[in-house]
Amino acid sequence: MTQKIAVLPGDGIGPEIVAEALKVIDCLNQDFGLALETEAALIGGAAYDVHGTPFPEATLALARAADSVLLGAVGGPKWEPLNYALRPERGLLGLRAELELFANLRPALLYPQLEAASTLRPEVVSGLDIVIIRELTGGIYFGQPRGRRVNDKGEREGFNTLIYSESEIRRIAHIGFQTAQKRNKRLCSVDKANVLECTELWREIMIEVGQEYPDVALSHMYVDNAAMQLVRAPKQFDVMVTDNMFGDILSDCAAMLTGSIGMLPSASLDKNGKGMYEPIHGSAPDISGKGVANPIATVLSLAMMLRYSFDDAASADRIEQAVTAALDAGYRTADIHSEGTRKVGTAEMGDAIVAALRASR
Ligand code: NAD
Ligand code: IPM
Ligand code: MN
Image (cartoon, rainbow, N blue to C red; front, side):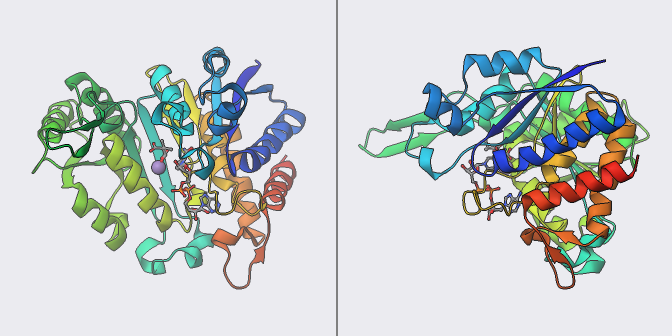
């Protein structure tokens, strides 16, 4: 059956890393009999430059019509002077909101070949395999009121609202418990219940929903401690579930445990399992256009797409094994390079993965 993928490369390194995932798609079609059809559209700054909006109607329509979405990254210094409504990031946030992609799965897995690439000692990170589940369509990112104003004293103020409804917390809690059920049955909910009413409610709901999952051990941690524990002893975690902003921050932190932010894929799912797949990193303006970005997070995001949206675990496994094989063969982009390995650019890494994939036929 043909599966249609909306491809949104975006800005900065976005097009460079997405090009490598497209090579993998071609290989799956040619050598493994898959029927993945792609259609590209503009998002973010690239869309603003052409259409005057980071989130064109046509892009949303394509994403809705497709079976799945693959996104690169959005944003960059060029568009920073724009007001918020026109910033590239609004395109991404708009897609998440419009498609109701409330469940963001961010697995952090350390490939054994990359132990030397982590900034942490091998014994702290070796064998690391955790999943951060980030609520993606609520919280302070979307709460109203928000904005800028001048107060009575004539001073400028900025304000945002942290708000979650019970149902929003409940549905992400279920995703957390169900994910933990399929793994080591430990779920750590991360909040700031000692200070914020909103996350006090978060904790209450986690406990309530937990009663439906007696086989999962639920624990709670304040976010400041969680950030510290992630660096101190990350293997204590199995699945973490947290709100939109905490999840954003903690997943970048977890990325570094695996050697590089260029390694972490993500799936953003709606209630039916339809999803958007993207690396967790951004458009990396400091290296964009140089052909040195690590495409692995994007390739692994494609694997997640096959696993979660297309129910094709075999192809997902195959892609992940091809990544392993490329690492085994010594290929490293600059961000994961260490002594004794072979430093390559974005395209060479993509080619190495495709070669390994093809060889696995
Ligand atoms: P970033 O993730 O783009 O980059 C942070 C650092 O990590 C940089 O040094 C970068 O070179 C490096 N890096 C990131 N991805 C890499 C890769 N694949 N290979 C090698 N190195 C990589 O974060 P930032 O610099 O804070 O943000 C830059 C822009 O990206 C901003 O406009 C931001 O809003 C946007 N952003 C977008 C997304 C997204 O589209 N999902 C995510 C994060 C940031
Ligand atoms: C991410 C990014 C986005 C976020 C930005 C670009 C809107 O940092 O996907 O992690 O904060 O969610
Ligand atoms: Mn982020």
